[in-house]
Image (cartoon, rainbow, N blue to C red; front, side):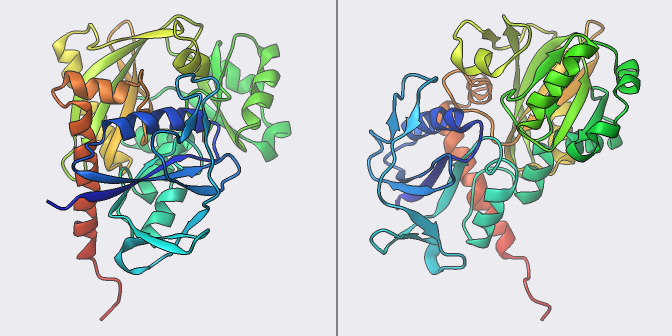
Length: 365
């Protein structure tokens, strides 16, 4: 059987660059080398793309999440939009190589927000994960919450502040509506980057300054007292949900450091110790959320469970982490889908979507 050539896109011009490197390493290790040829495409923090020859030395400090880095090569590359046979141009030596499917493991901006998905679509390359629309709206927490609210799905109350309106914004009124504490977060960022928990009004300015470093739109969100639960979703037209896991943070909240740097910052309880009836309700709500946001391929849906067992959707990640501690693959493992089989399934979903979309007309005649 002919091997499938998979292009792994990792790194990226994002605050989650290092997380992407960790995820890419795990995916590459899990890929069945008898089924797949692997082409590694690293993107540095300035947005330059590199062709990586050696999968065993593509990272520096690979076992240290704090200092992990891309081991750059001198082979810069670029896609040829519309090229025949899904070819990739290696600019440095003008050689061409064929890619059957791309696995973008680019967390955050310029990777999870529809930008790379649009480029791959223009290049006629099938890719793992949500399309342009699902990626873009799921990345923007403001748009996500508005769509979920319109669909009758419970979310935390929130207010939006744009950079241009900051000096006119009535923060006193917002805090009266939302109460204290509140969370302040960039609308388009992940892994809790730029997020602050604000206990009093005087700290709000500091939190806003921090959030505006990462985005031009910021959310002020009510604090939900509850357990943090997560559910993985997989599929295109007929998505299915995994079991449910719980994040138990040892910090004030589940920050970037607690997620990826401090090994004692949080621990995962998989499966979560909750009644089966609540598990089923979360699974159903995860699938509904996935469909409302036009997700495909994969996503992780995050929830709060209040003391009275009210289920509130927090956010959605269309390229969830694949690090050693990431919930998405772990939840599928306890649901009977091992890591390597999960990767196989995601690649097949990407190829299936490509076949489906080939039947769409692109001209009037």
